[in-house]
Image (cartoon, rainbow over all chains, first blue to last red; front, top):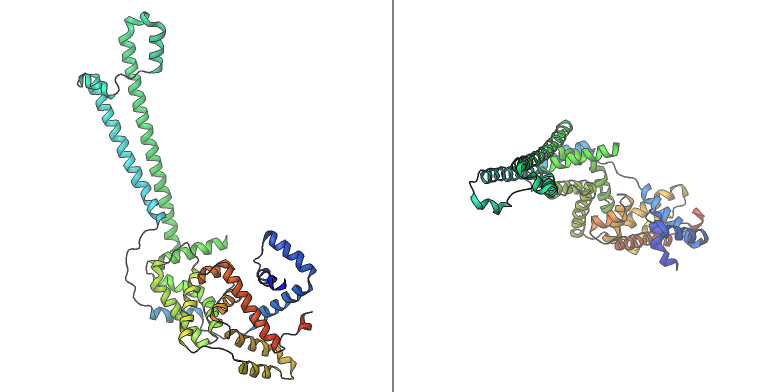
Length: 200
Length: 192
């Protein structure tokens, strides 16, 4: 029984027991004279080990100076980047890539829309989704049907203008979002860079 | 807060040392040398050898520094290199063991009538007894008592499971206790 307790005695002495095991052991220890005696002996051994005198060693600064003279030349090489560092530098690259992609998509969309509107694409324009209808345009034409016949071309023109405006706004918001994220990254980078320079 | 700043400063020094900055490495050596030399000395029991082994350990660390992972504990890494370097040398040397005759001789010395000296004798005896422990058990005991590492850290330094650390520590302390008891250097009524 008490042999089994020895590893726990050591763990208790070294503050390595936690939670329920600690509580259980404390309860046992309170009622067990043998374990109390063993614990005292182990504590005494620990005290004696710490009481052992330490010889005087060379001061740390002198040791470091001597060591510096013996340090071999280390071939300076570019250290492989840690995964965190790679991810950090991927952020601006990805943002620039996304910005380029978004910009290209919107430019092409505008070109196709314009070409389709002036009839340059003929029926090919329909492949790109044909005419886009806004909610208000659908509502007006379905509610008033024939009554708006005379005004249909004006409403259609307003509808196209609205669609163009929404597309333009969407594109603008995307660009603003990406630019803000990029500036945010630049800000964090400059802060870290300044901190590093201050520390060194 | 202070601790965080110190840790941050160490992280910066580690990064600079990894890049080959000797001055940064020197500062890290200054911080960790006292602990390393103490652990090595307790392992080998020879101050001269301890100093040499500490130097050998830091030289090895300098060469291996680019492969050190900044997320891990630098102190534990230095300890690991130092313990391995010391054990390599001790294995090549003739084993330091206390046979019964030597133990008896030390015990006889400790049996001097001057009780004032008994504690000093016990300490000296214990140091020698510690050198008689198998190196696996001694390494664990030294890292715990003088390196003040937790069981988990010792396990990581020596590359063994925590359970092995516990059993080796248990063995080492019991062995020391038996030796002291055998030679009446651990008096039961002393701490009653």
